[in-house]
Image (cartoon, rainbow, N blue to C red; front, side, top):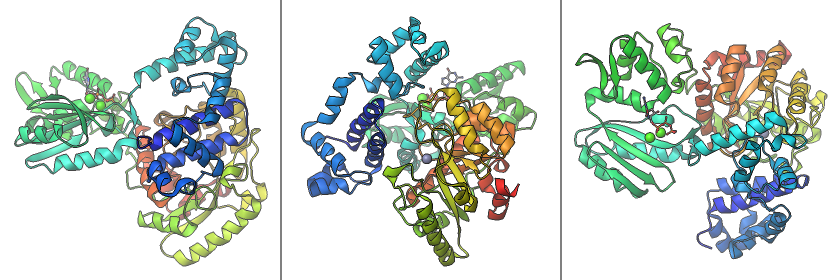
Length: 576
Ligand code: DGT
Ligand code: CA
Ligand code: CA
Ligand code: ZN
């Protein structure tokens, strides 16, 4: 029992949720999903909680009621849950193998099993290659093609981890290595420096007086699970968290060139090297050379300048137009990591958050924010005690009280995360929505609607003149839940037409993702970068939303919550 991790418990609860969703059971899937999320995020070890306080202890975890607590107990005692086994007997598929395959949700898995006896992703791949999927009602050739694409992509991404989940450990590692005697420079390069949402490994680059000391330290750290190689300039290890890390020590005069090389992306490097060749220069990880003479490479700034380019921020280095823009001096002035003045999505203990309005406001003020919107869920999400019109009005009173107390430090706005119902109508009356300061809407159900219906549903919602922001527009969760099938180009078009803001949700979703942020920027659709905080510590996640927006070429002007309160409010629909 001592070996059961919180993640294992979360995993089996999540499987139950998926099986229940297959059966079309209402509400329950969401309850299991929610319990899984809180167990994953719990700071206590669930085994200890159970050993100390039994079933009661388990029920202290938000979202864990008596029935789920009993199932967890059964799992801790026997390694199994009878309820789970029964569900699995009905549809004996390997759910695990389907994770990360876009467009294949619970309902599709069920259908694939019933029609083609598909149990796992290998069988799915075979069927798709054989053109069998398109023959099933509701799938079609396009879906079959997408499934194949997605399987290929998932194969390439195995072993990768969400940036957000590893950053605390990466920061700690960076800090420790920087403090070793004789270390003059140290940077985490690679996809982490580019702030990609999923990363494959940790690439570390350093300049050090005595590389041997650094290397010896690196391979003997307590969080090292395996040493692949140890040498004077390069060592490689596997960390206990399940990622590899390489450390390279380079000469001072090559640091910029090495940093540039190991930051990547590979496509950016290859393109830059081509430009060097055209200029009759040679670029490698040691520097930029004219014949044998190094003409640049100690810093990255110097390196780009030697090409006549402006400095390119790491988030842009994907060979997607940044080299041309740097040459033409038309790079965007990216939104900065400290540019947000407000946060327009968060939850309180009125629904599934854990703190009061006032505590959340104080937490936000402590982070330097000037305004926040409280956006609790609405009644359709009964499991989360979503607010009806009556409780909304009661919450407004608490917000007014909080504003009186906090005057001069931060302003709390009346907001909502109003549920978009199946037909695109909204979960609160227009009359109540009209009195809100900020109205956000989002989808939390019927993820498997056909593309057209899903798109129309969302469009109907954002055409509502009270709706200011579409929260987490595609519903994805990085590395865990694929986006629902929706025509984002069309939604961006309607957002432009109606003045609707699209959100980047910073809390494990990073939704909108970079690619769609860029489309918004190009279309002139404003975005909001929100924390979706459930406790004040979650305001720290804003950094990841900002990173995603930077990867989408967003400037501060593209992001409404970089505006002062007055200007932000004036940018909303009702004042247009
Ligand atoms: P990852 O680790 O898969 O999330 O992505 P990266 O971009 O960190 O890739 P990684 O760790 O394989 O390599 C780190 C950097 O080294 C990469 O961003 C660019 C550079 N690099 C790696 N392989 C090549 C290559 O074949 N050619 C060039 N020009 N650069 C490369
Ligand atoms: Ca890497
Ligand atoms: Ca690497
Ligand atoms: Zn939501």
